[in-house]
Image (cartoon, rainbow, N blue to C red):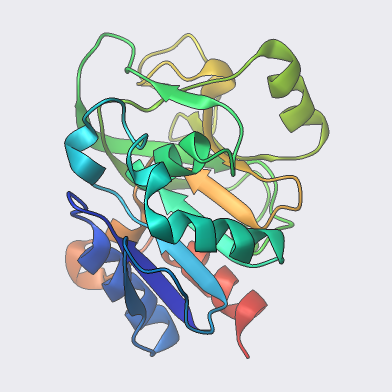
Length: 233
């Protein structure tokens, strides 16, 4: 699997993502600079977390207009796989590669805590490493993670199986009104969504931070093993 990780000014999770991809695939991902106007041959492009351009204007808004995003849009249109985590998810929505928007968290507080996600559709490259309905732990680190979309868009996501992950309790219970299991207040407890062809995925929590036994847990490994199984050359 040939992967590339995009670096924007303010990105701070690119090394975490590179380490996760390296641990699982055994290959060194390429680092892609936001001003690049061409891409190497890749199977997967990852937009990692951080605060691209300091989150000035709006989270992800400036990153969405970086030169490399034109290439990533073309890559996605041709069927390439794209993963956006946290700020990367925000950039993907701002670039209209994914629907909806990420608003300020309920309670207007930055969240730095563990959360639990339930896998809603495991028939994708991003989710095939889990069983449908599986629950895993993932760290949260965001101030603008409250997923929202128009009611008809939310219905479309549900009907088309494009909700990849939901916030849940450790036991897998979903309650959009419960701040313990849905800490940022996302509509319908949505934590991650997919594009229409299910080759672009965005999620707010950070599974890349739980892939090494030395860090105490490997809950995030199935994301990367699933991608490897799907995209290995």
